[in-house]
Length: 330
Image (tube, rainbow, N blue to C red; front, side):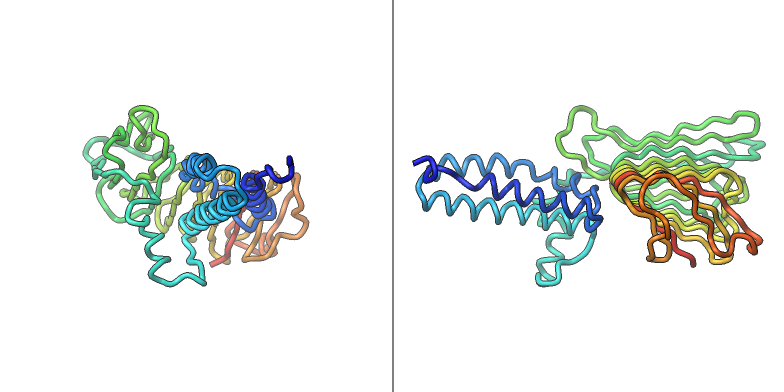
């Protein structure tokens, strides 16, 4: 009797969750996907409701298992596509595009958005000889570039209407212009995170600049071609950050990256030699697509082949938890 009354729906659910954890630990899928999967927590309530409605008959158990498999795999599949921005090959392009666009609002749970601009003009401060930019933008999508504009910084933002506006604090201290950008935040408890968007442009590019960037989730892209960089710090939680330096923007000071469960991709010119001092958990470090020799967890050091002969050098301090860090020469 006990065997006949047993329901395997939750066992199937746990198996599917375990498979996803296995994909995480083997590096097949980044841990950041769980931020996207968490959007679908109401599925648990749906499954409980289905269980109550169907009862304990054999047909009910079979139907319960089918619903569990379909809903769980569906949620994982949608989360995977939104997290990686990759299509699923066996689905039609129409279905893939539908998912990427949020399923008509069902999957991204997006709110009505507002747009605001934050601009710090050059005439607000005189005598600026160096600059620092601190960014704590939470879960968002952002781009950061330098350009030939007169303003010290220009930010175009788009964020949920129910959120507090992003804030740009600025001050001048002994010739150093300090800029602090804080991302939009919920006015009260909000069950689902909703990514804001920022397009950030640094003007007055000849000013030496320090960077300190924190991205908890989402995606960031930094392309710096002119601005002379001094210190460069970046911390990524469950997000993905792409950083590209030009020969003119190789940092002259300290470079420090911290990657939790997310992914960071660094592009640097081929002529630049580097020393990478790392503290690696269960994540991965690769160079031009290949795992760096000797990287198997713990602390270590990697020296690029061209470090001694190169006329441009940079030291990088790196900490990786369960995420991944990739270096690519361009």
